[in-house]
Length: 161
Image (cartoon, rainbow, N blue to C red; front, side):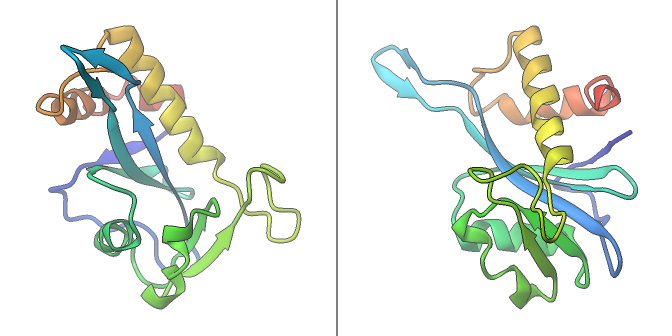
């Protein structure tokens, strides 16, 4: 079972011999609200395979500097990172981490390395399912982090994974 780590939590995932799957996902959908397009919320996260611990952070963008700065805050050097082929991840080895990728357009598990991101993908699916059920998927920027924290904090989402 997974346990959440929020942005003010000091714990770090991973370390030598441990695997952390990372991914970014968009929550919310396009809709027009009083004439303007509401795009939703980008979230970046990771799941440590061995313990099930995870971190989830709302981000303004998916640029390399943004994601790698967060990765350094939450994941220890020496960790094996598994991700998709998103270009912003290409400098992960510069952080002292091993980086394995799976290209989802080709396969879900890389046939050579065994890399996959199925745990973090499951976390996104469960979170989105619960947020839709609670009617908070398209909530405002102001309230999104508190809904996310509440859903993760009670354990009901994480117990589904």
